[in-house]
Length: 243
Image (cartoon, rainbow, N blue to C red; front, side, top):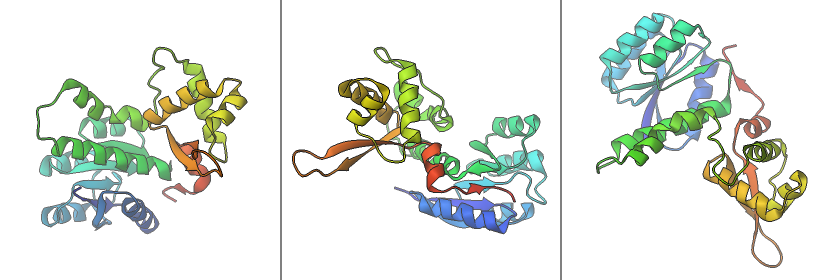
């Protein structure tokens, strides 16, 4: 798969290093360079192949929202994820309406940036790599990245209870170890088979992942763990901030 070069436009040297680590730790990205001032971005985009810019819209010399609109006009094939402490409604709305792929308000969780990069990679390769006419259901799936990114609930399908899905997701998020269907069912007061049905639905939604534990006899035991920001926060407490 084509590796997507990322330019990091951020004035804080500590955050530049942290963003670079997130980019290189993820799959499908490469590092294209740093910009510490607004006037450095256009020359870098002109001479370097860049697919995505991680941009602080309050970068010195960038001119905020107007600078972003000009950048979008001058480099229409470059996408932007904005990472900024600027949170005025006019700025956020203007950036999104002008084509920002995503907008993260500092300070934000490490996992939130990771999810934004994963969503962009899926979005980009889904658009560029397709060589057949679109079907509506495929396009709906691709454009549904924002819903998955925000973690907004999709609603329970027929035969499932939304409240039980929420309880099960919260149980896994708060658990310090992966749980089997039997463990989850016992904690929630439902059968193992019922818990497994709900767990597999959460796996399909990519809210839960699966691991396997080898046993002395029989098949490996299937264990479930949450993939959301609560679990990730326990793994690395630090927040990305503009401090």
